[in-house]
Length: 85
Image (cartoon, rainbow, N blue to C red; front, side, top):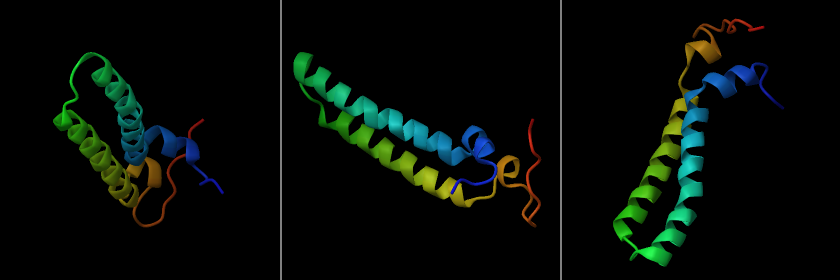
């Protein structure tokens, strides 16, 4: 079941932004591996860096999801965020 303000969550939640960045790194890794295997020698430090950044972005997404974000979650005392539209 979707949350009632799913459009606001998609547009403003930091967790979604971090997950999108992590997805970009996940998608870029096989491309880099193919290019590195074809044209240059593979550099383990670049692979470690990309994997580490992907992991850190995923951790940031998890942590940011549990924090209150005024524009998405409303006030801490239970007020709903204003509806757009």
